[in-house]
Amino acid sequence: MSLAWVLTLSTALFTVGVLGVLLRRNAIVILMAVEIMLNAANLALIAFSRHLGSPDGQILALFVMTVAAAEAAVGLAIILAIFRLRKSVNVDCLNRMKW
Image (cartoon, rainbow, N blue to C red):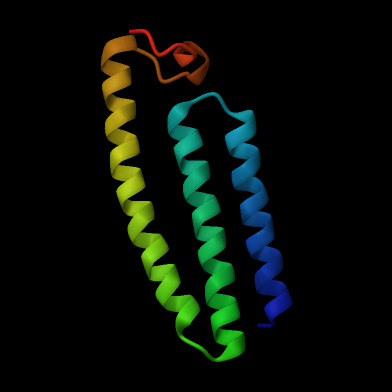
């Protein structure tokens, strides 16, 4: 598989993630869209790493996966706490920091 095809797929995934963040109002869907964007960046890093013959991109992708796992855990905990207080995960209802 050529580098251009993999980067095209990565660009498409990143675009889907950006559209998910911008167009959706559900906090869980927004969190999943951010995960899609991080996976698209990982795909590009690994493609460039393989193309250049250097393991640096793969190592960086491993760090990105670690940060993504932590972000998902913390993000879901925050969403769960907000749901318990507000009974909704709609981001339009969360426009104020007042509880």
